[in-house]
Image (cartoon, rainbow, N blue to C red; front, side, top):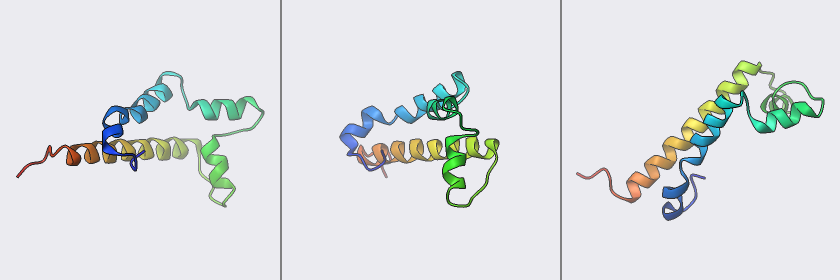
Length: 89
């Protein structure tokens, strides 16, 4: 998303924020809920990291997801601000 052109990004940078709110309201990621409904334990993030040999807890997986979302939101906002010259000297 950060690599999108600024003209598109200024209208879509709030989408990760909505995803984070969705996680809070519905108590988790919809991909994880789908993953668990098919008989698998844990988060999708946990399973993906376990496949490369990194074992983490549920709490750590949630923290990694939120940190990733925050970084994407901040980078997108900065890109839009720099493109539209919000920071003037």
